[in-house]
Image 1 (cartoon, rainbow, N blue to C red):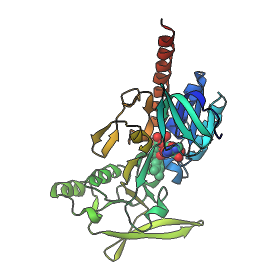
Image 2 (tube, protein in one colour):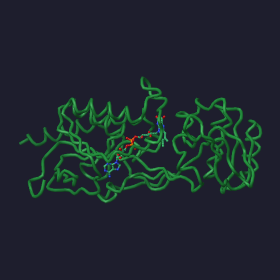
Image 3 (spheres, rainbow, N blue to C red):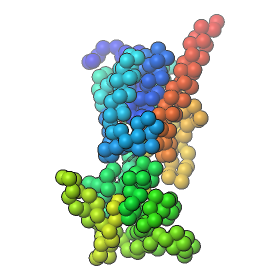
Length: 313
Ligand SMILES: Cc1cc2nc3c(=O)[nH]c(=O)nc-3n(C[C@H](O)[C@H](O)[C@H](O)COP(=O)(O)OP(=O)(O)OC[C@H]3O[C@@H](n4cnc5c(N)ncnc54)[C@H](O)[C@@H]3O)c2cc1C
């Protein structure tokens, strides 16, 4: 775009995952001028199938996003590929730097998701989203007949093991570097038949079947415990650099400092909104679709109020 004037729109959405696309669909249908800027790395891109999303159970996560982009495009939503690292307030508007040049927008909606930081155990990265997973509701059913291994990353991993016992009565809790569970936790694990395996986990055993490496065991203390899948708890890091550089205030949570939003998705920065995993670690795909639509409605109402105020003498 060179030195040409920045283009003006109603809403720039940064992030085209389920939350951003759901908002884009509603705002496009509300006849807003909407641009979505997306770098194309949604959190669940490692998984071949998505579960627990009504009407789309078992669908590929990337296919859902493709469908969403097609639907939103039908209402005039424009897409730009790339990262947005910076935006600044400019005379009541927000100027956003994109790969296609500067865009001035009345509102900015940040839906950039989060990054999962995996424990540094050999094989975890390669198996992420297939043989190493996080969410019982997404992958528990598929492994109900397997031995389920839970590799601890924090004292809260005991809860994850107790939860997974609902799916398989052959659940093994690997204490890993977190160390011994408390006597009370051990007693409760034993009561539900959850085996406890002490020692730091050294790696995974896999076997190639149908051209794919499948997890068959967990290596610990020089021996191998057979499992069909590993659940673990990665550290969740919100992709909130853009929001923080804009000065959005944060709040302390049990997962660290997260950007704060009100029930409608407003941040503390005028005109800047946020939705989905970037502000809510508990937002699965269904929740992200829901809150995307909810925030879009609130954002559109906010724009209508501004339109009224602009006409008020
Ligand atoms: C392995 C795995 C499997 C999962 N399986 C399921 C499942 O079966 N069912 C389920 O309900 N949930 C599942 N989830 C959770 C699901 O991934 C999240 O609920 C969902 O992705 C959250 O949507 P979002 O729109 O907030 O973020 P995302 O889907 O992560 O989308 C964010 C988008 O923003 C883009 N972006 C980030 N930063 C920038 C930037 N600076 N500029 C431009 N673009 C940017 C990213 O490239 C990405 O496209 C799974 C998660 C994992 C890790």
